[in-house]
Length: 221
Image (tube, rainbow, N blue to C red; front, side, top):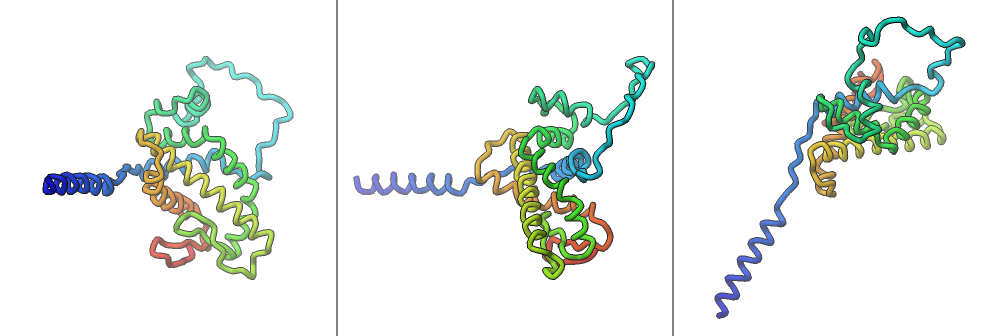
């Protein structure tokens, strides 16, 4: 009888151990995520002082037939309708699908609004070498002598906005993959979402800006 209980206990321990080592394995669409980040930047990241000025007189209506309308990219055609009806997953392109999903998130729109307002200051600090783009896509201070206390506060706020975008990308990918939004799944996707965000921002950096390589080394572009 004692041996039977030992056997039952051993089997139970085996199954518990097996369950404990089960890991989440979520495929990360790196190329699609990168293109989605670029689409969001193109659509939403605009300096506040460079907004479109309203025209003095409204344009005359075009006499052309409806079928002659100028073609646009699938992303810009689908954003309004898909974000309103919540069916972004019907998009043919995975990058468009991710961008549409992200652009429908209020926290992402707010993050981009905030980043747009800070854009002139952040670009100025990049240009004079005060800050650089880390390998996580965050803003890192490199020369404290060129950064004021107010600048520090703006940099902290900028990084919070960037973290919001990266976290939202991770959540969007889990939704796209029909994965449960568990902490384990988020923890697995977040590093890849951050690295891809960093790569996107570093590719868009201007010559002379400081960027951090994945091995931690800082170089000027």
